[in-house]
Amino acid sequence: IGTLAIKHITLLLSVKELRHFHHSRAVLKIRPTAPVEFIEDKEKNKKPIVQDDLFERVAKKNKTKATFNRVVDVFTKQDVRRRGHVEFIYAALKKMPEFGVERDVTVYNKLLDVFPKEVFIPRNFIQTMFNHYPRQQECGVQLLEQMENYGVMPNVETKVLLLQIFGPKGHPMRKYQRLMYWFPKFKHVNPYPVPLQLPEDPVDLAKFSLNRIADDLDAKITVYQMPCTDLNESGQEITFPHIVGIQSPSQIDLLAKHNPKRPVFVEGPFPLWLKKICVYYYILRADPIPPEEKVEEPYDPERCFDYPLQLDLDLDRDLGDEENFDVEDLDEGPVFAMCMTNHGDQATLNQWISGLQETNPILGHIPTLFRLDSGTRELQVSVDFKPGPNQEHQESKPETEERTAEEVEEQPQIRHSMKQ
Image (tube, rainbow, N blue to C red; front, side):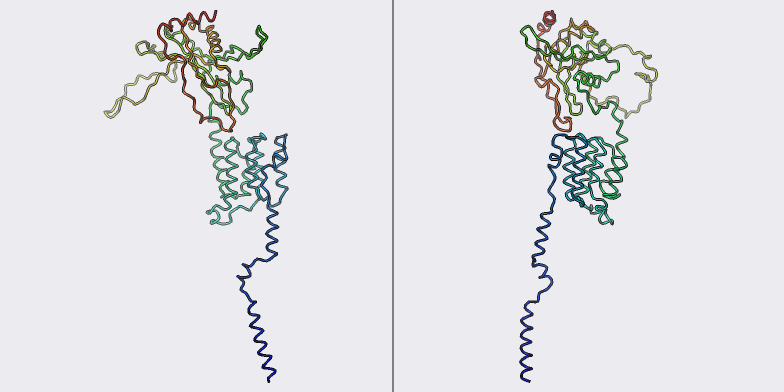
């Protein structure tokens, strides 16, 4: 009996000592183990690096559509799970203007194909309501917004890819539906569209710009001087600028009726943006005619049969109808002609006035004053993508603002002596 009691006591003591080593499952989860640390280090080493310079490494010199597609293929074949695809698509969108593929819908579809398929589609209404995978959806919307900025129309392949990636109720799919609704409506809304490729020749560009400003089918463009180079007596090379002008028959008639005692003014330069190119033009104008010198021309009822300029209708008016309208009528004076040149100095513009005298002989008897700004007078190209509608034109600072009557009368004699 004594031996059995001793064995029982020793067994109880050993059990108490073993209870010290028992732990709960929560303690085991909190305490890290060596295999877990090894897996974390392995995942850290496998994290993909953002491919910011991938385009520079693959396409160092030859930046074309083929090299751009090659970079996209290299990324897609690099990893099956396409890790880092959002960063890659953002980098590709920034590089597209450098490769000249910013207006190619097939390249945008190739970038959409980088997204993993059927992963970001919401499975229930709760995921749809809480913006399932917001980072990827925002990237897809950004891609469609760049297509909108460049005027690229999505096609059927774009719709199929968006359905496979984000489903029918994702934000990119809604953006696609808005584009397909508004783009056909505004495609031909501009009556004076600007071509994608503007002419590189400055004379052709000046002709296109003047036709766009004039808005008159009867206006005639005249090239007074072509750009050329010549050698003077001392052997130095002299560059002559181009001078292109435009004038309509109505402006010729208006200038012929101008009072020779009142001067005309050459003003400019005024900017005109054509996409990323800014050109400058000059105008020949006069001050508004005083009210006492205005002569009303008789109305010709046969000028237009379908849409007459005046209607003699005796309509009954109510006492509440107001005859006076609060409209500010500002008369800025007539514009007789316009021109463009790459050197807007007074000597160059004086050659333009001399050329106008062939069709407007009255200019030889009218004093001409020059009001030229001190700003730039040469063609400029914008560095940024968006043209400068936000740039404001500086107010004109006329060089000859105030002149006495004696100086105005002496001006024709000075101009004749310069031309001789």
